Image 1 (cartoon, rainbow, N blue to C red):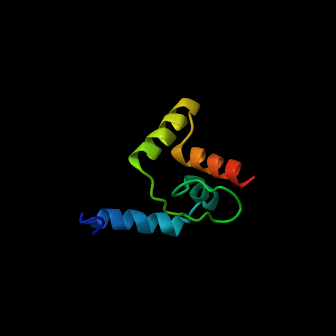
Image 2 (cartoon, helix red, strand yellow):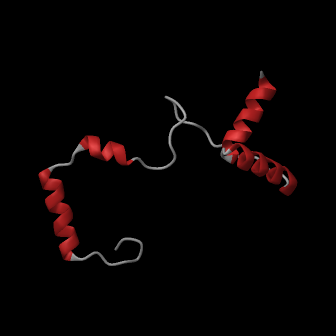
Image 3 (cartoon, rainbow, N blue to C red):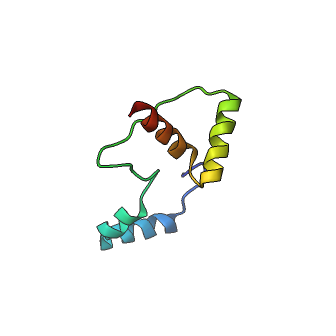
Length: 82
């Protein structure tokens, strides 16, 4: 079962045949998983508590600048720490 759904014998056979043919490693690398990296080393998630008003301000700036909330927060930190 995958996510509570039974896997058919046909699907198992198709997966086995695909594995026996071999995988295109470059194609698998292109698929990617999760969020894109921010550099050579893994990033660390840091939880921060913000008020509704603070988030609204950040989101408004992000919307105006066509950026993500995370980009705005990183830029604010960088500017403050310079």
